[in-house]
Length: 619
Image (cartoon, rainbow, N blue to C red; front, side, top):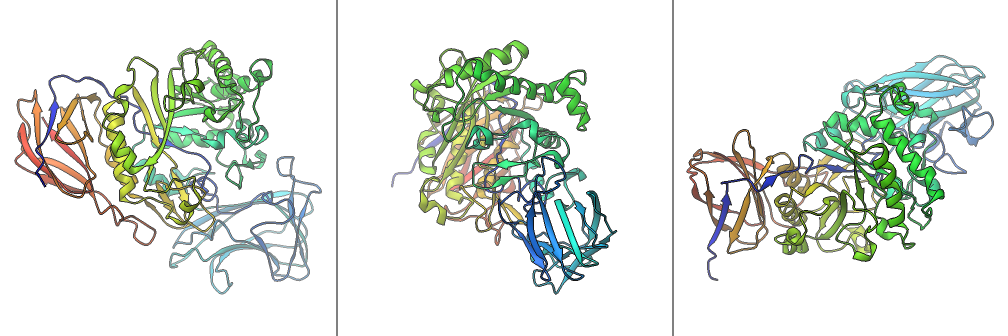
């Protein structure tokens, strides 16, 4: 085989453009138990007894107590059912099995709260093994009476081995009948926020240094029906006022992750919110005709924007302050709907125009995003208005990303609307929507990571008009029944979590990007590289993907650079294509950082096979 003569030329004479400050971000929605059973730290499953119409799903009898759902005398209209527990003897009660168990760790305090009524004496709360032989934590709650009262308690573990083999129980001191509603249990949360997030999952996200968060979804925004959309007004305020709703992925959402929680999530990561507003189309085909019928939904969106950005002198800004956050949040982008290319009615152009005009009239500084991009047929795109940005979605084989990335965005009009790649992700061979994919691991292999990285070089080379991009889906609960889609970036169970190889590829890119874009070319092979510069320091971030089976010896030429520090930092993710990470081997494929010497304005570097490499050069 003839040896390739590869030359990577970097023109540092002059930046071609500015890199969008929002280029790397995160996309989220309720799928794969991403919120309930995932990032949202609530440990009780079916806390409001609404997951099943007839049975108290995930609740079981302790000691022979009789359980039944009761609609008489509820706490409020948002909590229309309670669990009636008939105890014919003392020490009877109920147990909850959690989201595939409970995360038991040493010296950990768990905060419980619940509404309760009934004359059964004091209550005992425990975290214990499923067989009841081991008590991990225990506390006693004073007696209650005939009227609803909210009780809180803390359970603290001692020195125990980490396990998910646990249930949460409530048992009575005396025989009698007990009613329970909104039973909640939280472990320690990120920044110790009440109603907060899992610490390990937040740490994985913060480590990516995301510039924005696109929320609340995705299909989750639309719902299967209009009634099941993300109705933001029902997700704010105390959790006992949030009724929850069915999410489109086959399970019920508590709405504990409400609008304010999304905004606090952004704040905790130092990221900007990118808001998706419901635009009158739901997944099973229901839609709202443009015109008067759509006006209530437009008003709903305007009020949502006011809740996020309004001063405390506005109605919804005052409500945000009442909910605990007087300071307005920064907002630049509002996306109208989600994947409206699926709307067969052809109504999106009219719906978008109506939203666009209303948002621009009240908030002229906001950029309004269309959910139909250039990857869709021209017939589906918005024509009556010029969107500020187009949301494009790409779920492709790794090989297709590798083949297409060198030229994909070259054909775009740089003067056209900004491009927001709001969902993308490489899979190995079998498409995520095909049944055989269900037998594959929930998180992808190194092969997919190479495709992801190839596409990231393309987006970064055009990051002046590809202003935002985010991988999807972000999360997956790996327990049986916990996932509805693959591949996913981060896997977890109740106790542990890990990043896929694609997570480490994204981290390599998102944490090392300059603010200036440099022109780069490669002779001898397709261009799977990008280079940005940090204007304040002159540091160059050179990213290079070698998806092939052989090393690539490359001559790197720096044009317009008088001198360069002889030592450079190299961060590399390299592994055979089939290697991956898992709960058993969470760090099988991770990036490694080394120093190299002998760097000059023209120097040679050999990129290993199946590798993603970042070289940081100081000029």
